[in-house]
Amino acid sequence: MSDRKYVISAQEITCFQGELRTHFLNPNAIRLDKSLGDIVGLKNLGFHIIEVQPGNESTEYHKHYEEEECVYVLAGEAKVTIGQEKYRVKAGDFIGYPANDLPHTMINDGNETLRCIVVGQRLPNGVSEYPKKEKRSYRYGATRDLVNFANIKKLR
Image (cartoon, rainbow, N blue to C red; front, side, top):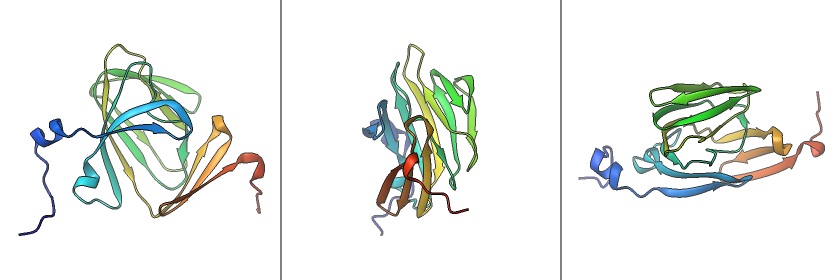
């Protein structure tokens, strides 16, 4: 019998402590992350249950050039910024972020814990842009290079 885990029970998910993460470019982007996809060995798809406390953001305002993401809100409410538009979301709402589309972020501006399922592709390499920080991130496997917009030379 293999030690490989394929099924995570509801009780195990509830008891799983997860990992408290702060985004490397945004000290207010603090979330508790239960990476269920990692537990079952998913390599090409990230599946997370996250919790964001009132006043905190889920991430830095960003976009991915090649990877798609989506969010399903389980509990709480938040303000989502996609491009220049702001949206109210609450339990039962779904958000889709197509690849190479508008930058986005989410802030818990409610009074209770925001709890969401976050799903995203995990390509071997990726490019992300952080417009408010004027930075672009190039990821090659476990290596990440962060470049200021001013240092990016367009070849075409």
